[in-house]
Length: 119
Image (cartoon, rainbow, N blue to C red; front, side, top):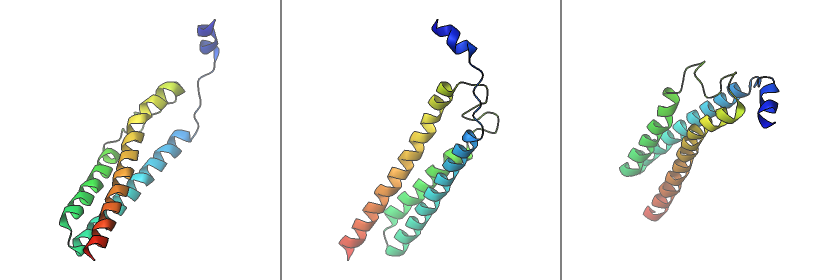
């Protein structure tokens, strides 16, 4: 009986894993924000305001989900929820983080090419 096997399992004890994951995402947000600000300032000094505005907007986009993240107790992984449900809830934040990191990399490539072409 498949239903019986699932109901006889003890509740999942995630330990500190959700906290470590949350801290890793916070570090990613801080890193992307700082790199975006440095890129924006560099582009202002180089005289490329369009890229500077794009980098500043990326910094704002990186910080926005971090500021609005759920409070403790309402997080992505609650102790009494199953691992399958918790991991499914984490995907939107992971996808946003990956998108912001990819956008920062793309802006860096565009800024480098702009600098090389101007020289």
